[in-house]
Image (tube, rainbow, N blue to C red; front, side):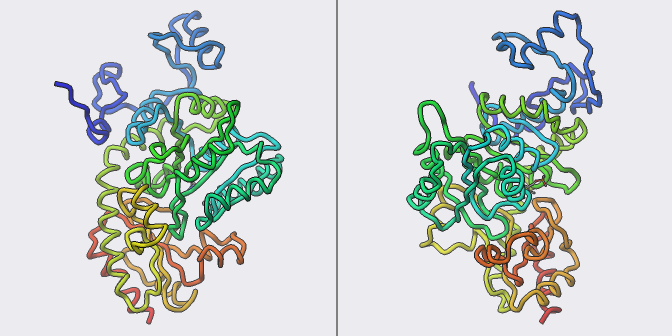
Length: 416
Ligand SMILES: *Cc1c(COP(=O)(O)O)cnc(C)c1O
């Protein structure tokens, strides 16, 4: 009887053949830079395909060449990563930033227009506004509260709409959990697409993927991850990934070959291990986050809570949430009564929750966006985005939820 296995059942085995590695149940680390060809003809054939000189034949088995181009750990990881997002292919990088910068470099040419959502991750913002501008790419941003019509008018207002080539969005936004409608962005991309040119829509899904949101199902062309966060999930590696159809990922992988920013065999091996527990980790993390949020909502010294599980039912954000996400995630930001002094006091008094940036890991982390992750953001923009001195960001881990609540409670009590 036909039975389709779910991704969590395939995460331990998909894409790996034990018989090719002495029967080892787990893929060994292929710590090698290069691979021996069986013959000169075989080497020639592999290079022809790798360098795009010809298409792969239907049933041609391609061998490995050199670890900048491909490596067993990289290939197994890329096959497995496709399962959750139901994508054709994926490309794994040595960091989230290298995934993001490689995508932007591949799909933008000097003179092109890039539309991106604001706020966006600090590193991404820097790359867009310092590097891309330097090479002659025009960039404009939109805010989560702007309508489709307003954004379209804004693009036309640049007098360069014919060169709109890429839309880049990050949703939910960090650290405020603002949501962007992916379907709306697809419609904007289609509005400016022509028979010759499809405007590419890329979504940074680091906060919610791959478990709680699948942007490809909502019309995105590319999904991007900092795999350092939930996918890696143990605060012990830096990595990134891009997913999409064969044609687009081929372009991304070709540029990656020449930039040389692929992930190492060891990092891929660690990520393979992480993928096995991704679902159980993320499920526990969102369950814990919902309990922590319920606790915070009732505290008199907590002024405002930014969490997808706490959205008011009649808002635009709530309708996007219902359409795009299957769980509220595990990132909670909240405004503490007072300002920087109270926020720092609270952070300094946490005992179980660690004071550190980054997110998505097994251990819970807390930080102060205004002076840490978003320190470089223009003060005016910070105010507009709601990143005040009283804002604290929590990434909820897999600990016992009552222990987390105890820690937050005692740190709040020590503060006031
Ligand atoms: C961390 C992060 C990045 C950058 O990823 P690195 O792995 O640190 O290079 C990009 N986008 C988002 C949303 C992030 O949280």
